[in-house]
Amino acid sequence: MTTCNEATGATGTRTGFVAQSKRNTLAFNADACINCGMCSAVCPQGVFAPGVRGARRVQIVRADACMECGACMRNCPTGALFVDSGVGCAAAMITEALRGLKKPTCGAPEPTCCGPEAACCG
Amino acid sequence: MNTTPDLMHTTSTLTFAHHWDHFLARWGYRRGEHRVTPGLYALGQPTPESPVFVTANYTLSFDALRSSLPGVDGYILVLDTQGVNVWCAAGKGTFGTDEIVRRVEATRLSEVVSHRTLILPQLGAPGVAAHEVKQRTGFKVEYGPVRAADLPEYLKTHQATPEMRQVRFPLRDRLVLIPVELVHLAGPTALAALVLAVLLGPLAASGAVAAVLAGAALFPILLPWLPTEDFSSKGFILGGLTALPLALASRKRGEGRGWPLAYLLSLPPVTAFLALNFTGATPFTSKSGVKREMFRYIRVMAGMFGAGVLLALGLRLTRRAK
Image 1: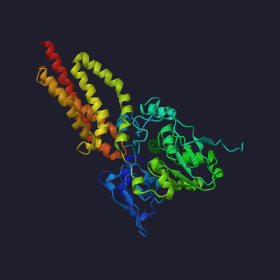
Image 2: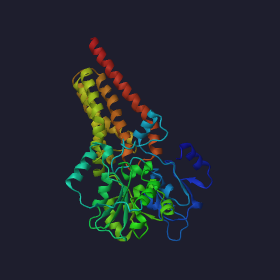
Image 3: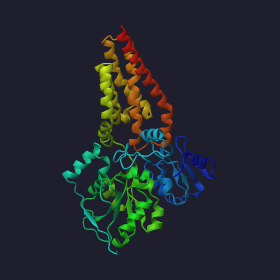
Image 4: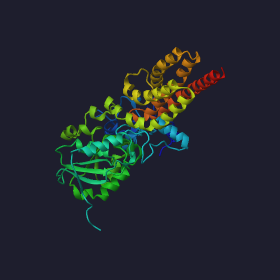
């Protein structure tokens, strides 16, 4: 798993990656993008606009809306996207802090903060 | 042994027993036990050409999928996500590449169907690398829509519209989350109310209950209409409005000028804290955003709450001294 420090390092120092928003950790390496459309297919927040036919790379149109679920990074076949993915859940972060856990979790098998269809763990 | 694993059967019909199970799940009853046996299911009368849908082994996920496919013949591949829904399981990685590979092999899916496509729920994507699944199993991952209800429309073209790809959080989705929040908070709230009733009287006890109800029940309902952007400040606004009548009531009772202030200091942070905790139940908060919000507000909440409680105790002691 990527830790926060590695993530900062990746967005800050890995060549080719450019941070896309001040509100989250989404970073994009335009040179690596082949405009396959996977990121726009998996993003639940419409961050990416499917590239126009013939375009060389995807368009990032709503970078601020990124919720850092990590779907785009995981499904990008060329590794052109980076995000420090994790849980956007205060309850999980507080539990993490109290228990000294390294990574916030919803606590399987019994989720503590997940509604059955609602999001909790990105 | 070289036998094909058992193919289980299911339908798209939900009975009273299924709805009852959903009701219990919503109320947090045996939360981890609403499970479906992982494996391959036949829906209707599938042929080797029929589509394969992948889902989690949580009854609400499985039932949402199959009940959205009336009249469709297909297969449902249920992953072992330990009874957790698709989105949360994807975040944990239990709805993930390894489990798909394992389940495709264990069910000998390549011998059951003639095509090589798996239809996954879009919200499973954080746990799955589509290209890796293809590489390891030969099956191409096709991400279907966010909501199972859009599947019939999706199946006509196998293309999702931008609307199908966008996650939403309408009132109904927010409402169904309230019962489990209330169940989690019932014990501690009752205890706090009891202690407050003994120490400070019924008004203080009802104040605690009101602050919790505002945070756990009113907040999810009013979320989009509360002004400001972050959850904590929305919670402070709602908590302030909830505390106001109590502050006025304490003033009316003429118990001393400090009491209204004690209510206004101690109750809003309780509502705000519960509002902050609701971040995890929404489909749009990011880790960076929640971290930023916690850093900004947690100390304010603790400070206000501590000051309010100390003031109330102080007022109680001076009243006794008189």
